[in-house]
Length: 124
Image (cartoon, rainbow, N blue to C red; front, side, top):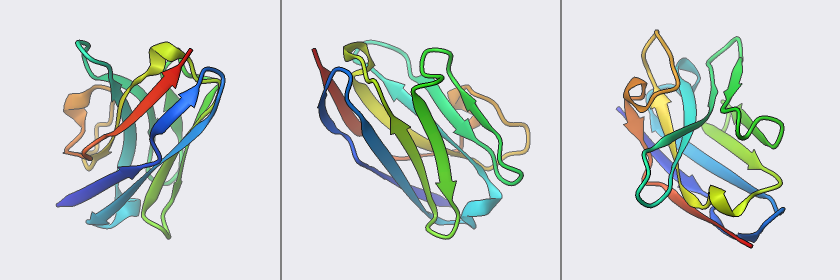
């Protein structure tokens, strides 16, 4: 079992930055990959970024590449998402998720455990 708790959401102006955190408990954090997704009202849950277990590799949705950075601190059981140059259309609930499997992927069905989400609102 893995429990995930996100934090760091809030209200920011367009062009601003936020850093989201997700702290895990339960299973050994370094043994699984982590991802970030987001869901805007009336839309499907959308992949944002993924970070593997060691050796570390990262993946980004095309829409955020170059502006968002995912990282992990295994000593703190925490994954981060640094978001820069935020846009109003990126207003959504952001979720972290754990992938304890071996196949990997960027679709929600690949992830076994989910946090409760944190709201990010970008004003114009």
